[in-house]
Structures are given as C-alpha cells and as structure tokens.
Amino acid sequence: MSTGLESEAAFRARAAEIGLPEDAIDRLKNGGVRSFGAYAFITSYQPGQADEAPLITALTDTMGRAPTNAETIALRRLFFESSTLAVNEFKQRSERDETAEPTKMPVAERNARLEDQKKRLPGLHFSPETEPSHKLVDTVCQMATDQTLEWTPWEKLTSRSSEITHSQKDLKFSLDSQGSVKVATKMQSPDANVTGEMRVRQALNRRARAFDLAQLCAYTTMEAWHERIFEVLQKEPAPNAMAVTMHQLKEADKMLFRKLAEKTRGALAQQPDGSKPIETHFEACANNAEVQFCLIPMVKGVPRANAVDAPSPNPKGKGKGNGKVRKDYNKPSYDGGAPPLPPNCHQMTPQGKPICNTFNRGTCDFAKPGKRCKRGFHVCWQCFKPKPFSACDH
Image (cartoon, rainbow, N blue to C red):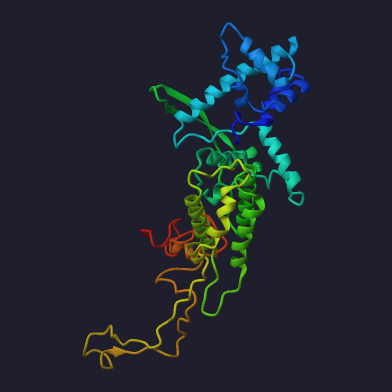
C-alpha cells in the first residue's frame, strides 16, 4: 500500500526526524513495529489516558529492554502521531467518493520505491522526462487501495517534468457527510502530448513505470505488452489490407484493461505471498479473442466491377442519346485506396497546409480540433472551420 499508515520508509524517516535513535528504531522493527499502523495498535492505551504504563510495558516487550528517558519522549510523540494518522486514515476512507483526489504517497515512501526501481532496472534511463508524474503514480496506487483497476487515458500519462513546470493549484469546494463545506486544493496538470508514435510510446513507458512503483504489475510484464502492440503497428499489411492504426492500438489497450478488471475485481493489490493478480492474468487477457480482434488489419474497400447505368440529367427528348449515360472508361477509376473527397472539398488549406482526412470522417483523436496531427490539420474539408466535415454546418 502507498498510504502513510502502511509505509515503512515514512515511519522510519519520521522516527529519525523527531530524535529517536537508530538502535531504538531497529529494535522496534525487529519486534514487528515497522509502520505507523502497527505502532498505533501496539497496545490498548490511547493518547489522553492518565496511566501510560500499558504503553511502556508494550514498548519494553517489543524492544527487548526498557526505553531510556530520551527515547520515551520520542516514543510518546511518535505514538500520538501514529494514533492520529490511523484515525484520519479511516475517516478519509469512509468519506471518500469518486470525485476525491487520489491519496498522496509519502515522500519517503516514494523515494524509497524509486531507488528500489533503479536498482532492479539498471538499464533503464531515469530523468524527469521519463519518470511518471507523482499524480499518475498516486492514481495507480489508489486503484490498489480501492481494489479496482481502471484504464487511464493516454493523454493522462504525464511525466514528472511537465508536472513540475505546468501544474496549477485550484480550490475545490465540497460537502462532507455532515453538510459542512470543505475546501481542498486540487492539482491541475496539463495533458501529455501523445501526437505521433514516439510520444505515445513514451507515455506507455511511463505507465509501466507507474504500475511497477505501485507494486501492481512488474515493469517488464507491462512493457512486453507495449512492445507487442507496437510491433503490430510496424508490420507491413497483407495485400488488399490496410495497416493497423493507432486508434486500433488504443481500442486493444482498453479491451485488455477491461478484461483484467474483470479478473482482478476485489483482489487487485499484491497478495501476502508476493503474487500480483494482474501478472497472473495478464497473458491470458492479452491473448483474449476480443483483444486480438482489435489488432486485425482492416480490409480495403473493393470497388464495383461494373458501372450502373444512370439517368441522364437532360429531360427526355432533349439532347442526343436515349436518356442514359454510361461510364467513361477513359477516366481513372477508384482503385480501392483512400475514398475520394466529397464535392466542393479540398485536401489543402488556403495556406497550402494538408488537412487530416481521418478527422473529417470523425475517427481521428490524435489532436484537438484546429490542431495538427501527423496526417494534417483538424479542420473541415469545405469551410476550414475547426470541425469535422461530418459535423460541420459549413
């Protein structure tokens, strides 16, 4: 768990901060007290009671010796903080709703997990650009607390660098269970730039790191999936088939998380024996027929072999002929590739910039309206407004 109540690193850092000697900290650890949660329930004594003999007795039994006077002062303070933190933790869980911000991981715990990840993955490059943002890690850790897996949109897989330079604090007002107004600070981070294959790949790499830091899934397991879908993206399509698109990769990724959420419902966090439910079901879900169906190349459209006679625009009896026209076979025909543009539409803007065909058909989401993706600008074919042709009023 990432909460401060269960963090061994945060407990040790706080104990040292208030002056508890290393020997006393080690004795508590050897006695089974490694976190605020364990220390808060070491005895039935509660802060505020007149007789603290039960606390001293419990500490003596745990440490193997009676604490000194200097140690007793720090131990009293640490016990009071542990009890207060336990009460606040339970209160937050009972009052938490779907709109609440994810619980923040303590700084000491975050640093300890990051250092452990660096040791386990020596060939991985660590920098603010490659590391996941604190909010992303907290969001994944909150999934473990809630025992519910959720798919995070790719644009929300932000880096620590963007969080440092672009995050803003906004005030959030809400009502508690008693009807009182609560004011909380909500961090607003800009979306990650996922335009282009390289940026998408970097975002998915940050997601694999975040799940590894949250101890939900090993980095290598999730990165193997990312390599797998991008390998499909790079394959040359078969004859009469189109290449797999980034949109198909996203749909396959969504379907995978949907299947994993079904398999890990109510049992998402790491188990006492060290096993991780996501890793247990990952391979079977990745090979699921519904997931693989999303990665199948689409077949190109097949044109009609023969032209159909069409009525002449001229009224019957006017002009030459019998009122029917046939296809002119001297003109180039549609070969089954990209469909032709609708009438009065243009492939370029007045400034000579390319226009995204996929956006005008309503299926491209790699850039916002008016912006540009790798295919071109997201503007209307006909009037050049920042709307798709299918939804524009021209």
